[in-house]
Image (tube, rainbow, N blue to C red; front, side, top):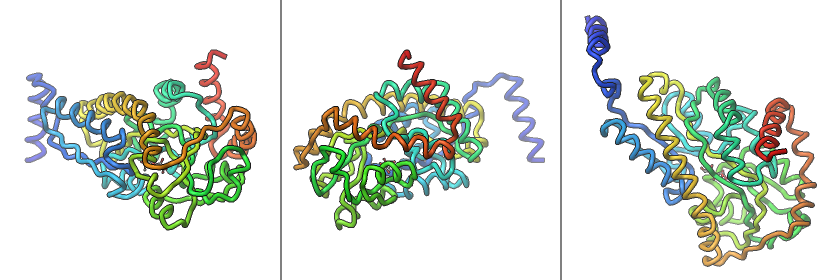
Length: 334
Ligand code: TF8
């Protein structure tokens, strides 16, 4: 009886051509992130929230949780796969256990500018990568920016290759980062982001690496003395949605999710880039000593880690790396 009634309603809706708004249900969407709300991801989520409110006539509530309150990147992503949480904004790096091809972004010194990263992520390569994730129960709505990573530590300024020696550095749960820092002579330990502040504070580790905006908004300046402009990798953020939940949404609702994630992306990237310099100033004002490495030294570091590409090619997939390199060559006009 109930089924019949539903079918009738659907048929009526279709035949009367009622406004598409009828396809939008009242929903509460939970989104989590490991960083603080003051991070540019906060601006992106706010833009997404406004977009959703407008497109759904206020039927959707975007409920955001910050600073890993619902677990770290990996835990939250697993909750999406099992359909117990709608959305997470996560770095790609901790998810290589789920999709090894994502490791391509962790190769050291891959992108040379944020614009180059945008072109790769928003183009065919990014679409190919997002498609791969669907098999793991994840829908990537958009690529946002975590950014270029820089090393902080409590031992000494990093001015040359030899300065990495013995540094106990936290890396993400990712074998490519582990290899990169081992190769540089450091002593890396994989750790979830949520444990990093305390580990630095108790001196269980000496160092960590993240973009300036994260060092600033996660207050690492309180427990670190030196920040060096290493820019050794660029990490993208993904706006992931649970595929089991996504599949229950109407096509119109799915489109709203995708469109609003793109609106959020443009705000998030703009704020991330504007805030980067400001964050560097903030952390110096808070007492951190900043240094840049000279070009010759950066070249030595780059050469030292060149072998990382080869060693992880089979895991990432040689075809994926080739496709990335072809895309970069095209963008660079080579
Ligand atoms: C890391 C990442 C993190 C982000 C954040 C938790 O170092 O760069 O800062 O993924 O959302 O773990």
